[in-house]
Length: 340
Image 1 (tube, one colour):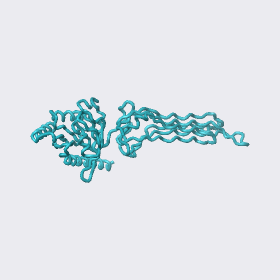
Image 2 (cartoon, rainbow, N blue to C red; image 1 turned 90 degrees about the vertical axis):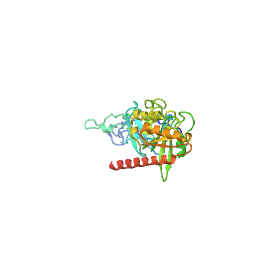
Image 3 (cartoon, one colour; image 1 turned 180 degrees about the vertical axis):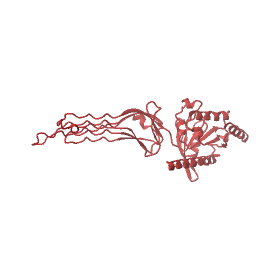
Image 4 (tube, helix red, strand yellow; image 1 turned 135 degrees about the horizontal axis):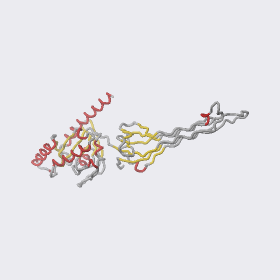
């Protein structure tokens, strides 16, 4: 299934059914009086967060979603049938924005969570409703109220425990394929990964979800390169794994480039726990590895862990370090949920 993390769709709730103008017709009753029923209510548009989706690709081909109208009222005081609501399934982590792409209408994070985005129109009143002491035979009924309609943007921010960030060709996809059963595309040229990949990483008796985010370049927070859309996927992660290519000519500058983009994007990314890793150490001599780790530690002020996604050297230690941050994040969220 192809990955799509943004879609623009048109939604319209159902119109209410029209009220009925009718008079009671019974043998031997000369003045039966009004008996027109009310119209039925139009269907609502409801967004529901479901657990078995992880992409918005369905809404590339189904861009118009409409609920049915309510049925009109009938004689003998019969109210028209209401229309069924239309439930729009979306994956966990979906945010709903108005057409201006700035106003957030809903944020769906938990499976089973529902939001009624558009209300169906009320049914119109039948002529029975207009009967008074002075108007015994009203010939008036209301049309149904129109439903609501609007264009909205759906944006998916993956809910993963760990976000994998780094410059293009830093070895992120190789690492993900080494520690999980994910099969991302791997090649020796930049921007091989064009959409996020998810993998489940097992650590001892536990596991966490890692998201391989496409490589960023300078200016990514402004939409340059693959843009800031993929930075949003890191917002919901408990920790970040920052990979730096050990074979790069300027390791310190590579680190600073990614750090500046995370800082400029905002969203609390620089406040997340970071595991900084010098990757591709299998291609370095011991002397070059020590020099590269020293340069990276000086530039970042963080402890540096050596690793090679290709030879699997150091992967176990990095995974266990990430698991510590993931467990701490889970405990923190559980505590916040108890306080609510």
